[in-house]
Length: 100
Image (cartoon, rainbow, N blue to C red; front, side):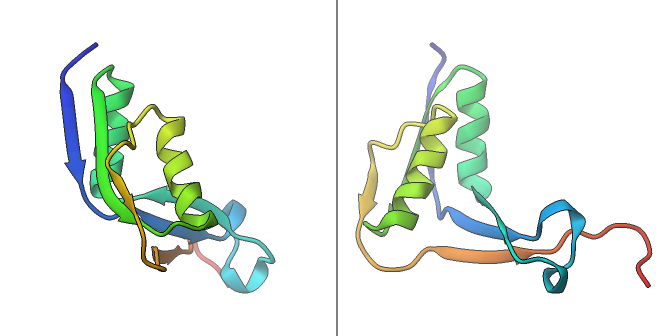
């Protein structure tokens, strides 16, 4: 095992329209969790380091989904505090070439 690495930050919920569609064309959203520090923790875990992510997340289904997303990539979540009601969220509409 590599070094122990600890990152501190906010994990964000990204909602994006699937397959390069516009929001107005889509009935569903793709869900991805990320953020600068969370992404670094995932990368470090992928390189074989013992990576920890420290933050606070609500104790509800969306908060648990964020924790599960980190665990899926091998990030240790031992130091994630639980409480509050909100998770940071942003929307991404991917661009493609010229649209009419």
